[in-house]
Every structure is written in structure tokens, then in C-alpha cells.
Length: 103
Image (cartoon, rainbow, N blue to C red):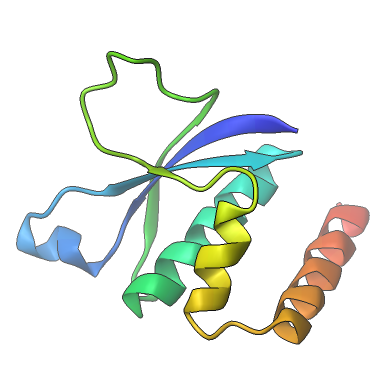
């Protein structure tokens, strides 16, 4: 697993608001991006999303912006708090795995 910094701009970007940063631990960049999209869309009830930044590694102590650190169990806890159930999560994991095997 690696740490990834994923920056998502939701519909709030149309009002001039800044995007949201997520630090996620994932095996691949694609998994980290999908996790950030899923979490952002569920927590903000927003499907108008744009990935505006992806970098490997967690921000250092001088990182100038707030970020959502959802490494470890925090991602699952926050996702489940949105009403996302474990059966849906299992189905999503199978879909992601099928996509990765097909590529």
C-alpha cells in the first residue's frame, strides 16, 4: 500500500470554492482515485466531480492546505457513515477488481 494525495473539485468549483484534498492509502493510483471519488460523491451528494490532482505520497508538515486523512480504517468509517452498506462496498470491490483484470 502507498499513500496518495487526491484532489477532487466538486460542483462547488462553479461557485469559486477550492477543491478538496484526500490522503488515501491504496495499492494503486486508480484505486486511490476511485476511493476519493466515491467518498467525495457520497459525503457531498455530488456527482459533478473532476479529479484535479493526483500525487503519490502524503503531504509534508509544510503543506499549505487542509486535507482529509482517510488512511487506515478512516475511509471505511466515513463511507459507512454516509449510509453506504457493506454489501455495496463488496460489489464495488468486485467491479474494481474486474476492471483491473480486464486492463
